[in-house]
Length: 73
Image 1 (cartoon, helix red, strand yellow):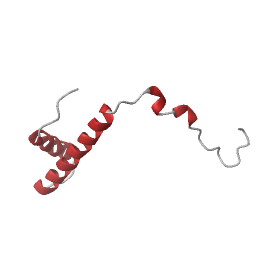
Image 2 (cartoon, one colour):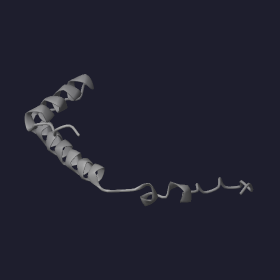
Image 3 (tube, helix red, strand yellow):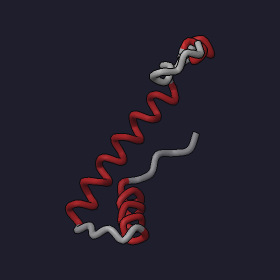
């Protein structure tokens, strides 16, 4: 697994992304976005490290609801 980005790297990324998407972000807003991005990254790492097996997410149990008026079942 790669190392977490440093705070200055995250802030630089946020600023570059804002420029690329033509979003006006002042310094305070860019810092708030960077803080949230770091929090999200930490949560993603925790989930990624969770010891889950194939049976922990029984996707085969999901069935979409039938379309209204659709008699096929």
